[in-house]
Amino acid sequence: MVYFRSDNILSSLGTTTEENFTSMVSDKIGIISIDDPRYYPEAFPASIIDQTTLNKEFNIIANKYSNNDSYTKLEKMLIVSIYNALSKTDIDIKSSRSAIILSTTKGNVDLLSSDKKNSYDSKRVFLWKLGEVIQEFFKNPNKVIVISNACVSGVLAINTAAMYIDFGQFDNIVVTGGDLISRFVVSGFMSFLSLSPSACKPFDKDRDGLTLGEAAGTIVLSNNPDPKQQSIIFKGGATANDANHISGPSRTAEGSYIAIKKALRQANINPEQIDHISSHGTATPYNDEMESIAIERHGLENVPVNSIKGYLGHTLGAAGIIETAILLEEMRQNTVVKTAGFKESGVSRPINIIDYNYDKEISTCLKMASGFGGSNAAMIISKV
Image 1 (cartoon, rainbow, N blue to C red):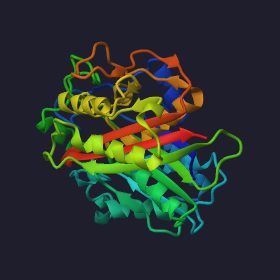
Image 2: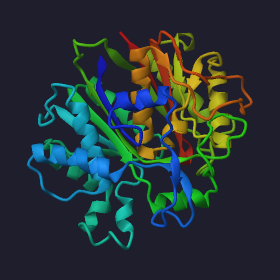
Image 3: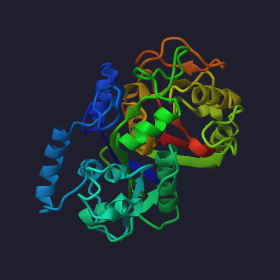
Image 4: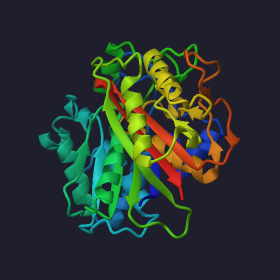
């Protein structure tokens, strides 16, 4: 079995999974208006990590490691998140039986800006170099595995980690992911006309685009359970591509449907056994509609569905990891978190979007993810 041993979320709502979960249950939104020409000439809504808080957290850790090197904001975010997740386990990150998988879509892309490009070694902008920096900080003997496949990267990274452990290649894997709010990222999504002028509203009839978020997340998987807590295991995972369009998802949800079907088959369970669905839920017209079709095609229209992007925005390479960490906390607390921003359904299929927090026994869950290029991923996790 592959066990979920520990997790962490570093975001505008807190520096731990528990803080983020409590904030969401308390209806706190991490999305604010950003009016800073370094990011974009006009104000836009986003969720951003406070630099002062981050530096304080990082400096404590760097002092413990006697490390005085210079690190970028993203590197600090990932290191803090990994450290906080590992601190709740007895896993030896320096062991050859432990590995690190990094999920990111842009890495240190902000180093391309004119005011930063001479601040660090030019190689620092490459994703492999970001992985190397993390590997060297924690003195892990294995080369970091980098997964960058649009916005399914996080879920794909967890699926990949489970595969490595299941095959016996590693005993423990730290899956970490992060992305920054940068001028490059904001300009790119602005060019698609895909950003909402306000905090996003997943699945709502008035949804008008996504909101960007900046965060780091970490999930530690292992072949050994933690005897101090109820075990939650990876049951199955899969990916599929709709081969539809470079940015638009399949109108019939073919890729997502196939990914879910394969994940269910690998988990050896029926759709009727799913208690809760954590959707991708970007609040764009096409994504939410596509997901609703995939859910209904599997007969899951009555299963509670939520999206947490109304709290933290779309955190890109971190999204699948952060959303899985919240899903794990929902399972531990037996509490379903509502979809912030959702009031009235705006999708054609009658799926069960949650608009209030409530207690429910949660044993088996489906995590969905979708991204540019027609990419789709799915994962099944269960209590044992």
